[in-house]
Length: 251
Image (cartoon, helix red, strand yellow):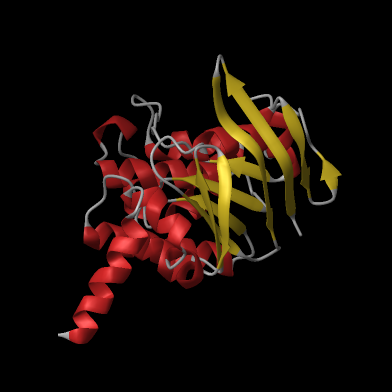
């Protein structure tokens, strides 16, 4: 396994945001983490990537215990995350924004800009290198966030709702980009609410609710579990759906 997360917890005041959550990701997999709003997904991402200090638990990446490491150190090892709220440098060009990520590995400005061009083409932004980042659409900013992360040359990429706010066509395009990224040798752990993307991309899926992992398996397996249905649709939803199905069978 390239990533092993064990019994991670985080409390904010009296709120237990994440409680003894564990997950693992194998090299070359696409694994998704789903759950209702406020379930603890982004908090768990932040602890894995070093942006939040866990109250307890451990993170091992590529066989190295990275628990408590700062984000830049984790990044240099090859574990990189994107952010749900995209914040590019608006007055810099697309190429310059991507080069910021490339400078994690490359000291030369020319080398970083060359890398930026390669990555931009890989995510479908090759024709927008000279555009100011502030002029991009939501879909463009999402691709830019993905490109900046890729420019760091990650082994494991954590994607936090990279499809939020996109229309159906844009979602299909990003699904294709993510498949290509995996094909290039990058392992992916993603948070996503777009279930079409989860079902199409994921080898395995974890479900978290109220900070607790409640299910794990293939997307088809987890979406049929009563505890997952109730986490999304409310208490008793599983029984109501089953009754509706039974009623349909008698009709």
